[in-house]
Length: 290
View 1: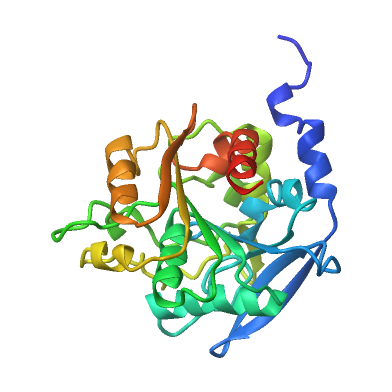
View 2: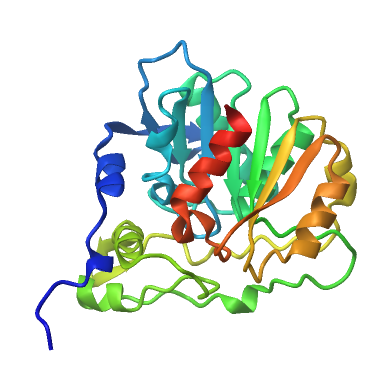
């Protein structure tokens, strides 16, 4: 057997260059909870704002190799929702609190009506902010977010989630890192980077950063009426192999939102679009924004 390295584990030049772009790690208070955010090219205050919102139990660094591609046109922020990443935990997690997290990040960056991109869970929170605070978001791009459009039992259930464990070593924790859903085409160097920033040191070993008392935010009522109130321009993007958002669901979401463009499919991508096809997502976002 050859001893040559597996090239899929070696990051390509574009990836290492993106991660080398300087960014600052900051915190802002949101209703008594410390919200962590990353900000690139903070000093370029003449540029409009771009805010990146991650999915459930993910974190801001899912965007770290995406954000630098937009620095030429935007000042860019990615943040951690409460109970996730490096943000603080809450006694209670609600739609209102998650919206507060997003607005706090916008305010901390000093943005006026920024573009906001939200993936999965984050996309639902972005749409909630557009409906309830139309003066705060200038434009929204939603990436593979499932929405409850009809009354009845939600299709995505909290039973998919398990309590987190403590592992004796970092290597043991890393070996247990999984995406939910598991389907993905992400290169190993991307999974390694995401996993590295998903694990933290605790007294007894290593565990995941998210707060496992935080339930999945299940919307039992349909959100159709909320979507119809949105006046913010919206674009909808999804992975063409996503089991969370098949084409029919993406098209139905677009039909519910006034002034919505799409749905736009990212080829050869599952739910975790920015991990599966990061450069295709960058190209799509640029086409929508430039």
